[in-house]
Length: 388
Image 1 (spheres, helix red, strand yellow):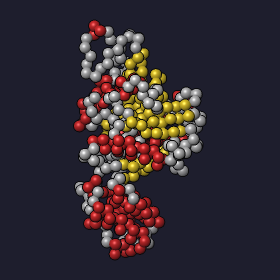
Image 2 (image 1 turned 90 degrees about the vertical axis):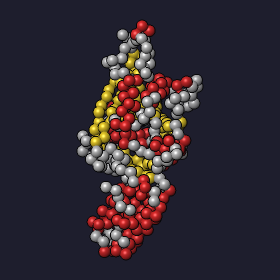
Image 3 (image 1 turned 30 degrees about the vertical axis):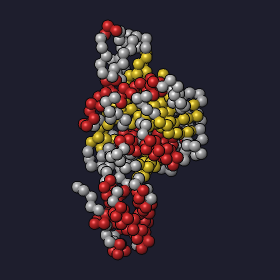
Image 4 (image 1 turned 180 degrees about the vertical axis):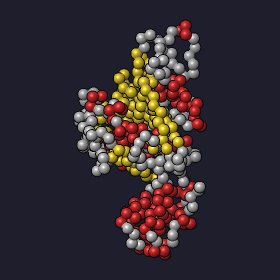
């Protein structure tokens, strides 16, 4: 059911002083649906506690200048004229800051909270890893603008990382003596990179025992990279001039189609990484092949690529390319010239060579606020030396 415009739904400013606290709370929640919507499909069914995020888009209402101005005036009146309860006042103030600032500029800020279950992991006062990101509305004239929005796959992967950092190579035993290099492909708004940066830079975290950490968030489109750099800077950790101690985070351009043929890539993409992440990055048929060829140069020999993709009905063919390009570990074997032609996207390898294979696959069921089921596939991809 479509939302009513705020000017039609909210009680009049004149009647605010006589409006009940419960009615005011419902009004603020209504406004949140429009001006601070969660990210669709981020609640894993096996989780007891949900993360912040997930939901429907209401871009039309959010972009309506008249409605936005009405909401700003309504919230200002609520805070200054009425005498609401403390929680209502606090929520209204936070929503006013959002509407008067970021939303009026055509952007949206979302705060994500991810529970930390490891006793060795730091977080905020509630034990969470919290990150605030800037999203930019879709631009029909800029194909790359889809990357300037936070998608559910990044939320789910971030939650998994916070639950079990060691599973993703973010523990002292899985890094070198002096440094750990982490790469995110198709970083978009940078959620996964910033969650990892926050996680490893926490003053109470002993995950890496003081090792140097370099987090490199990559994307291709200029508008996405600009927004990504702003999100990294706003974190105030690991960016140029920011805190974070031994942890650094930076944004860099990476063209998947061109990178494999570069003779001398510029730093920091000039040597392999210890951990590579990718969330919701397969939406064209050629992406899996491009990513495999990039990993050939960017994935360390003992490292793993952690990939999470939604299994969308509209992109079934694209999703299937993962298992066509990356064989499962028990199916990978050397091939000689007598074996015939390669299938589409399959790279010919022989005995005694190393090949990228799927070491693990997990299906994850999530739920959107609407009750709709969203299914993701998680892959752990790494090298295997072919001996037969």
